[in-house]
Structure formats: structure tokens, C-alpha cells
Length: 359
Image 1 (cartoon, helix red, strand yellow):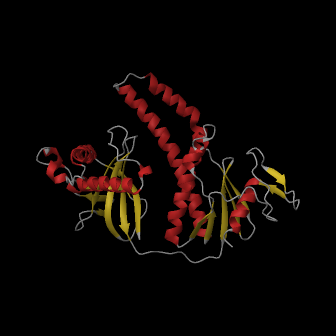
Image 2 (tube, rainbow, N blue to C red):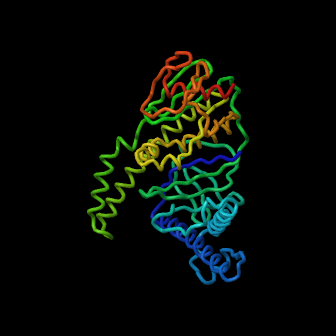
Image 3 (cartoon, rainbow, N blue to C red):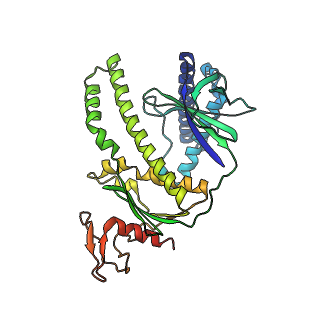
């Protein structure tokens, strides 16, 4: 089983310069190879098979960085091409921007050239870099990805191959309905219903974020004060993102620890985001990330995820008698079933109907 562990790095100024060179060279070789592939195809209607090695003579600065960083950039480009030809909706590979693309590069462990020792990690061509190892792991290091976020913090994501550790089997089943007023409404096979409050991290920080963004917009481009203001905005966005991830990780861990079968609804976040009135709230909730975390944690722990059909009428059926009385406007949160007279809560009723799919 492959699992990634992410740690904070604390490089020296010299190491920061090296990382900047690696980020730039990985981006440069990606763009250079993509450009030549496009030109070659326009002329010959055939795919160009180019490699990073053939550019080192023309661009000597490429020799100063880890060669595996360039090789992984090539693999990323090849993967982007394969994804495009597999599914055109993915989109054609795009050029990487210095200011918009993520600053990162990936290197591989060969002969133990990547290892952890005394609160430091040894990386190819740079040596030991200080890191904060807040948790340990067991297994063989396959590769690591070094990255820098918009607020200037450095991280390393270590990909480790280890033995599968399935959790003890449990008979518990749960149905999960996602919402905005409450983030998730769950019903298990014991009949226990729980509403998990939507923390609304972006909404709560919006006033402070707007103030920081207005301050940034007033600064002169290219000035030091503008860069300081940019960092302040980036740090506020980073805090919101970290708060959201922390909430989602804790909730998905609890759900996957306690339940063997998990039933969730199939939501198309991309389509839902087209609703301008709800787009910001949906993005703030992080439904897509919640489902992604549930899926990979369930796989690691030997749990089963069941996704209801996209058009499954979980909110239209009575969970007591099964009567279906059609769609209802979003403002209707409670009603009585016209067939059996059961008083229904929209979200709880939906979670009970989803749970029924696990039986």
C-alpha cells in the first residue's frame, strides 16, 4: 500500500535558492517539451518523443538541479497527454505559469539517497534539510515531493510503501446526506441520527479577508509593501484551507473508524457550483474533498463505500413507507407524508433513505 506523509520543511537561505532553481527548472522543462511537442505535431502530425537530457547542452542551468526532478516533470507531461486522449473533457495539457502554478518538484529514492535522520531529511544534491516530523511511519520511501505554498512555507510529501493495515471488521452501517445549513446528517443502523454543524470557515473569516484584499489592491505593483500585503492575504487563505481540512479529516476518520458500510449521495460539485447564489457556500463546505477523503480512508481500512445513483430520490421518498411525492423546493425542510402521515425532516429523511441502500 502506498501512503503519503506530509511534513513542514525549514530550509536555510542557500537551500531555498536551490529549491527555487528546482521549481523553475521543472516548470521550464515541462513548458519547453510541451511547446516542441505541439510544434512537431503541427508540422508532421506525429507525436514527438523528447526527453530532458537533450536540452541540457542548450540550457546548461538544467545540470545544476536534480535530474530526477526533470524526469518526473516529463512523466507528468506524458500523463497529461494520456489523460487527454483517454477523455477529451479533461482538457489539453496547459503551460505552467511562474506565478499561478504550484511551486513543486518530485524526486525518487534510489539506493537510500532519501532518508530521515535526527529531525532532518536527506535529499539528492542538497543534503540534509531540517523538518518537523510530527508523526512516524514504517515502510520504504519511494519518492518525495518538495513544495512551497503562496505564503512562503516549504513542505515535503513522502510517498511510502508499507504493508496494508486493515482495521477490525465492524457490522455498523451509515447513511450520509450532505447539506449547507448542516454539513452532514448521518443515520446509522442503530437508528442514531446526528447532525454535524457546518463550520463555514470562509464565511466567518470573510470580513478580515476582504480587508486584507482591499489593502493589497491599494499597494503599488512591484513594491515591497505589496509583497507584504500579498503574504497577508495568502496566510489568511491558508488558515481557512487548513481549518477546512482539519474539520474534514477528523470527521472522515471518525466515520471510517466506526462504520463498515458507508452510503453517500453522488454530487456533481462542478455543476452545483454553477448556481451563483450557492457557489461560495458549496465551495466553503468542501463536499468534493470530503468524499475524496472518505474514499481513500475507506480503502485503507477495508471499508465499503456505496454511492447512490445520481438521480436516486433520497429527498422525495418517505423513509417510513416508501411513498414518493415528488421534488420539493429547498425552503421546505419538514413535511408530513401524505400516505402514512409520518412527520419528516428533509435531511434526516434523506440520510435514512441512503442507509436503506446498505441493506
